[in-house]
Structure formats: structure tokens, C-alpha cells
Amino acid sequence: MAQVRGSCETLCPDTESKMRIRENLLHFYELKNGQRKTPGILVKEFTRSAADVKMPQAKDMRTEASLRKTVEYLLKDIFLDTRKPYNVAYDFIFDRLRAVRREIVIQGYDARQTIPLLEPIVIFLAYSRYRLCEESIEKFDPKICNQHLQECLTGVLRCYDELEEQVTPSDLTIRELERRCLIESLYQIFNLGSPESFVRALTLPDYIKKDPTFKLSFEICLAYHQGNLYRVLMGFPQLPHILSAMACTKLPALRKSLLQIFTHAYNNKQLTVPVPYLLRLLLIDKPESLQEQCRHYNLSLTADRKTVHFNKTDFNNAVDPLRPRCEPFVESKLAKVYLPELLLLKKF
Image (tube, rainbow, N blue to C red; front, side, top):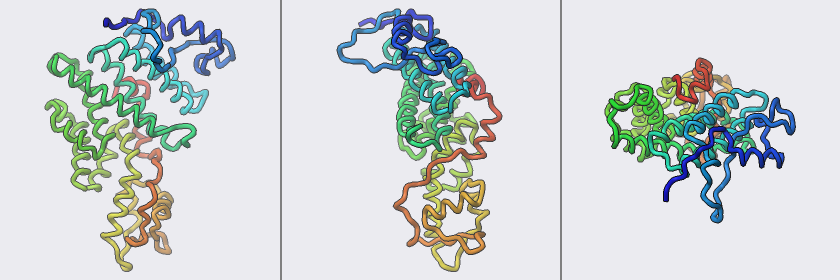
């Protein structure tokens, strides 16, 4: 059956706009100046397909150009709107980007059309996974974000592989090559420890393997597979902004693993490990945060709080790792970039 090709050039089809205005179903970000019942810019919302729903008509589907405008509007104008907390903006953007993804599938876009639409969505989800990591589950569900990030990463990687069969690297622009290298690197860090991502890294084209960012990402993953957690942790601050942010979501589990290793290596009442060394090794910025780790895993500090005792029988392995936090070494990197340009992969 022939694919439906959208003809709508606006961010929201006229049929949906009229219905939602009539039924007063406008989101805060769709109200002009936040005023109730005063429509501003509407963006097509995500709706689940039902078995008895007919194939959408062309007039209710956005064109490729319109979908790109939608992504740019969401990841610039809405992203920068600070009238509400970021988790509110995230929920709105997340929903509207799901609608974009659904239209990509319905219209049967090829790899060349899909890649520029999916890549920014991947970066948005990766950034949000870090930015909202300290929020309560009522405001942000990391599992759902992880699920959709994995789906989008898998989708864009599939497009890369498909495009690779059709064109050579010389047929692509420098920007297209750079964007792929960044996304491939993000896939490696997000799936740290995964055999599938590791095998993929070994089969990638040489231009990706030689990319400095990808080389560093792969070296970190290789160190993880080798059990060298020290090299993994020391590599995290060397990663660029968005990759460093994603790496931070892995820190709690890595810290737990490393502390447990120390309980075996230093399992002696006479042995202690200096706090400054542990702070540097675990990428912890202040002693109070290390003390929290020790309390969580039932480790003892000496009376002067300058060293830590490690006892493998006392270590509480049953508790989950502490939640991720926004780390200073990531914040300093993100502060140096204009985030909309990063999300839209215009500059990185």
C-alpha cells in the first residue's frame, strides 16, 4: 500500500488545532503569553493508533520540512522557555517529539530523511536524562526516558547502516559524518558494558574508529569490559559535554562496584584509604558526598574523617546504588555551549 505523504506545512494540522481550541485542550506552552483560552502556537500532540482508526489523510500529516521546523521549535523556543520548571517543558517536548517519530513511521521515510529528525531527539533525551536525574519519580521517570532513548538510538543506527549500503563516506557532508561519530559514541557510553554495543564498535567504518571522541568512548568501554574501573572513571571527565553528561548516569553503579572492590583489597583493620584519594578516584567533588556513600554502604570513616576503613563483611551490597546527580565537571562543560545548538547538532 502506498505511503501517505503529508501536505500540512504548519506545526499542527488545522483539523487538530480547531478541535483542541474548541475543546479547550491547549497546553500551557500553546497559550499566548500563558493566558487561558488565548491560543498561541499549537504543536501536534501524540496520539496512540487504534485498530479501528483509518489511515491519516495527507492534510493531517506534516511535510518533511514542517517536521524539521517542529523539532527546531521544540528544542529551541520551548526548551529555552523558563516560565515553568524544566520537567514541565520536558513532558511537553517529549510528547510532541513522539508525534514526530510516529509520522516518520507512517510516512515511511527513508534513512536520509529520518536521520536529521531522529538525531536531535536522541540528544534531547540524553540531555534530559542527565538534567532531570535528581527529580522525584513523580516529575521524571528515568526508565521511560532510557527506553525511548534506546529506541531512538537503535532507529538512527539502523538508518546509518542502511545509508552505508547506498552511499560512501565521500558522498556525505563533514557535518553528517561528525554527527554520526557523536551519536555512535553516545550509543557506546549509554550501553556501557553491553556486548551488542561492543561488537558494533568493532565493525564500524574506519573514519568513525579514528574519530577522537569515538576512540575515547571505545577505550572507556574496553576498559569496562576488562574490569579496569579506574580507567573508566578517569575517562569520563575527558568526554565532551553530552557524552560526559550521559556518563554521569553510570557513576553511582561504578562507584558501588569500586568501593566493593576496595573492601576486598583493603580488608584489614590496620589499613585505611585517604579521603582525598577516594574523592579523586570516584569523581566526587566534596567530602560530604563521600561520607554519604560510606553511610549508604555501611563503610566506616576514622574519627578525624580523613581516611576510610574497608571491611567486606560490613559492606552492604544489598542496597541499590545512590541516584545520579548533576556533577560539577559536567556542569562546567554544558555552561560553555549554547544548548539549543547542541540539541540540534548545529555546533558541538
